[in-house]
Image (cartoon, rainbow, N blue to C red; front, side, top):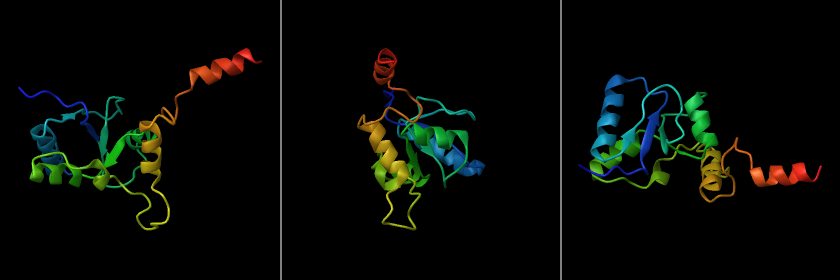
Length: 135
């Protein structure tokens, strides 16, 4: 058996076409990724597959958590190349129509990954304790 690569743990949101969903699931498995089903966002997710920006719990939570939010082409093209392609090439771009505006998904994901922030809703306990002590 192949070792599971924890760098590729997927959820999907807003993909209603069953044959497309099946094709994506087969592709994820073929490349050694993991798919977490269900309608609730899971913290272990590394990549959320969407076709467009959504007002869904999974989309908003993945965005807040600094996860990769990629289009289905990330899976399909990776399967064609028989290897995971660079995530950044497939990251959903909310500002594609206005190239001078930075993509907020990318900006936030980079802040979380480089440790500038730990996530939108996580409190820095050291700062909190310092503030409490200074009251």
